[in-house]
Length: 253
Image (cartoon, rainbow, N blue to C red; front, side, top):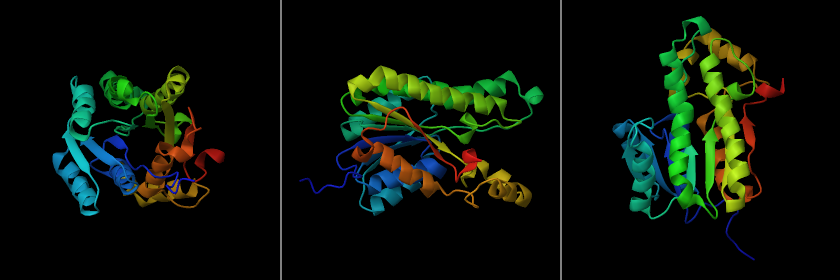
């Protein structure tokens, strides 16, 4: 009988986009702690260096690739750069995203396009580049949102992008599960991250989010990171095409 934990990522290589801070940084560190060698990508080189430094200090392996996921050369830089530096690509976490809440009538097409390009087009393009390396056991985890499951005012563009990413996850499952690639998504609820820090700085807003969450608290990045490790691990080998809500019960109301 094997003594290796089914939650181990030993021998795996993971790419995490948006890994310089927030959920991406936490996911990268958690996967490294579980045994993966991790490639971190984001626009902020200093942030990437800080996360990579923590991973290395804990005995892990980290490689950084500073780039904008929406750039034309990003898929090649991220995927090819990871394979060149770390020798493989087994796990892809499409975490990079932007959230620009605005009333619908004030949302420009440029605002819509920016969110669509980052939240949907970039994961599509990066995943497409990664597919040849993932056949026969790879995993793709897309970070979506409760906004893919329930409607929010002043967020039509964002909701549209996250809904699109969830259905893309399911579509790719039907296409690539026979090739041994698993696709899953994580739909976070109200998680305390730098992306929403300006919103959570308003005590009334922060309390409203807590009051709207049956668990009675806003989430921490570790709540998402631990679920990402599970979905990437052999413990989730029969988990295909699912959207795992990590929202403190928000969508159960």
